[in-house]
Image 1: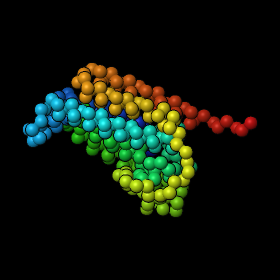
Image 2: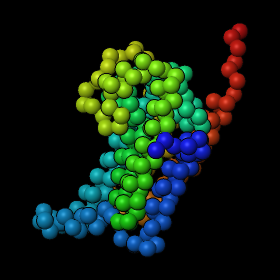
Image 3: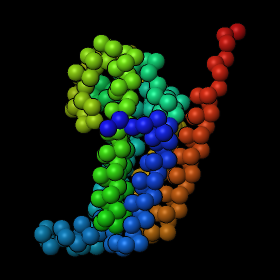
Length: 242
């Protein structure tokens, strides 16, 4: 069940393929999941279907905003070079911020992103996106956990016993380690993710599919720029002290 070296190294590309393939299913199933859900709910709640459609699309935007905030919070406690690294980083165990409530907040955010984006896909696209996102995230998690257990030993076992793997606890399960959050770096690293939330919000407000696609494309472009810069910086040798 663990992800291979290739899967981990190119996980960003795989996530992109999951989204891209799921969106492409519009070719076979042209009806968007969100409005279809609204049409199904409208008579059951005695609501106007077009109004409920905007509510569902706004819900998708809200889920994407929660996902973006979760990743930003997690990235604020990690360096972008760790978040977007091509290899598992096991030198230190981060146990602060969201990591006190859930061991894998970045992957939790990706599952939420699959749900939010799924509502903007076709009905079959929604199903494929959510299922594929959950399976791939768990494969990556199993890979990282195995390497962290091998390098961190008993300290990681204690952490695993206290903190849930993917579905967060409502309260912190471990004391703060005292690490300070770098919110500026967090928002910088996840700016592209906020673009997804903005795109969904724009669609809910305007129902303009072309604007939505433009904003999504811009967000994806920002992602590739962010991740490539982070990997390049991580590969640079450390500067010796003066």
